[in-house]
Amino acid sequence: MTVTESVFATDEQRVDDLVNELLNSYPPKTTDPVTFLGAQFDAGLGWVHFPVGHGGLGLNPKLQKLVNERVFAEGAPHSGARNPIGHGMCGPTVAVWGTEEQKQRYLRPLFTGEEIWCQLFSEPGAGSDFAGLSAKGVKDGDEWICNGQKVWTTLAHVSRWGLLVVRTDPEAVKHAGLTAFVVDMHAPTVQVLPLRQMTGEAEFNEVFFTDTRIPDSEMLGKPGDGWRVSLTTLMNERVSIGGSIPAKGSGTIRDLIKVWTELPEDRKSPTTRDQVLKLWSRAEILRLTNIRANQNRKMGDPGPEGSIGKGASAELNKDIYNLIVDLMGAEGMLYGSYEMTRPSFAMGFETMQKAFLRMRANSIEGGTTEVMKNILGERVLGLPGDVRVDRDRPWSEVPRN
Ligand SMILES: Cc1cc2nc3c(=O)[nH]c(=O)nc-3n(C[C@H](O)[C@H](O)[C@H](O)COP(=O)(O)OP(=O)(O)OC[C@H]3O[C@@H](n4cnc5c(N)ncnc54)[C@H](O)[C@@H]3O)c2cc1C
Image (cartoon, rainbow, N blue to C red; front, side, top):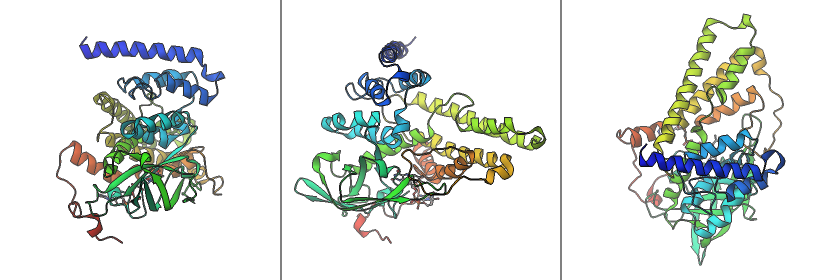
């Protein structure tokens, strides 16, 4: 056993003991979710790689899998399901970039789901080219006055806090002029309007800021750090969307196997059997690839390799539900109600038909598949970069609509 392996084994034992203690003191089935998640956070089992006192133990992030498997098996609530954007992206960003006060203030209620978070990055003119965004922040004493529009903001309508990136220096090149803030979503100058998706739901929103004042103390990092702060969020987002390692045969592929298994024999054919098997193999390859990517990730932030799982899972999920609705025949066209609702959680897949529609977004949200391929090409494979004509020009001089 190497020194690293023996340290890992000792840490594993420590985490296992802490999980025993947590489950004994707060049996998930009889403890309310907020209390359980609060105790999990306090024990350092929220994000084990976070610092001690902030929901973690400063350990290898691989050990989180051990915690999750054990607590979920006992029916524990999932912080990521209650607060997907907060847990998957905003928490890890605050942990890396926040001041001590910000970490103390925000991480615990974020983990328990008492305070929901949203990510205010995309704008009508800046999605893939998010660094070209136009929302502005202008310094005024020890505050910043923010104006502009964000779009596709998942769960903004139930959020207490938002992770906002605005342009604070239009004369700098586009990546250098950005600054990140925590913004109070309850401020009267923040307007949240629903945007309806093809499922009928409005999971996401457009958000308008009109002279919204944000104190200096709510900045993440320093003025001009916004791009680097955002990279932390985006890398975590990709792993959070596409990097999960479900048990063999579970996750979205389980839906396909279920539909296939329940299909009357006279509607099965060698062709559809072949299609099912090909998708099953792709799901398993993705699972194994994610295990490997996870092994490579030593500590802290995920890197560009998260784009493999993100891109592959998006295309796989779409293909899986394409086949599912094909196999369902005419029933695949039936849909309940298209009446607009504003759900308090994202990505609810109550029916196969709804999952089919919602999965279309997988290759757009969190960065499109084309952009994932660019990242992999440039940052993992070292291929020549995309053409970027505006990289060395001040943002104010770049032509835009
Ligand atoms: C369900 C859903 C939830 C979302 N939630 C959030 C959220 O909570 N917060 C948030 O900030 N944003 C959110 N988004 C926005 C999402 O991040 C953007 O939609 C995404 O980054 C793409 O940007 P865009 O829509 O402006 O498309 P564009 O950037 O305009 O892209 C249009 C097309 O051009 C292609 N393209 C663009 N640039 C390149 C390039 N360099 N090389 C090759 N092809 C390229 C794209 O792949 C795409 O096919 C969400 C989106 C969806 C669908």
